Each structure stands twice: as C-alpha cells, then as structure tokens.
Image (cartoon, rainbow, N blue to C red; front, top):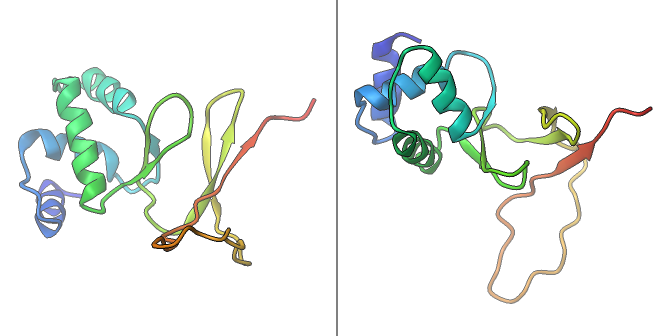
Length: 134
C-alpha cells in the first residue's frame, strides 16, 4: 500500500493518520497476514530506523483493534497478540516455538454452552495448542 492508501485506510476507520500510526500501519498492512505483539512491532520498527515509544505502539495497536483493522487474540502466549487477518478463522499455537498459524474456520459450527440469562454469543474463536510429534 502507498502512504496515501494507508492514510485513507486509517481515515476510513475514523483514525487520524499520524506519522506514528502510518509507520505502524505500513508494517502491519504490507499484504501478508501476520500475528504481532506490541513488542515485536516495536522491535521491527526500531531495527528499520523508525523510533517510536513502546507506549505509542501499544496504544496504536489497541486503537487499530478497536477500529476493526486488527483482531486482538487473547490467550496466545504470555502477551496479547494482534492478528491482521480479521476474517473468520481459528489458530494453531505451537507450544514449543510460540508460532501462531491461521487455519480455516470449522465447517460445522461448534455447539455453544447454555449461556447465563442476559448474555448472547458474539463469536467463537478456537485455538488449538499443538506440538511436533516425536
């Protein structure tokens, strides 16, 4: 994506395209699906010579997720992971390496538990924890 396309993408999601957000967006929306943490984005940008505070990265990722540009995926490792693939899918988590792999959503819906009164099911997200067989 060009800088102007990235800026328009942010504006389309009611976000001001600041220099910092554009740098983060350029890394995230480069045409490949990825799973990132704030720390990994921060480190990648630092190595590319782009200097942002870690707080700016945390805030921007949270704002991108709230705007629907990313999907926050809790429970994958020791930190919150963000997924650039916002379509319906599930995950494999390699417990030995920490690698996260997207897999297609189940063709058969999972039966949901009986929910307490006043609650409704919003989504089902499944993470399979796997390791290589010996």
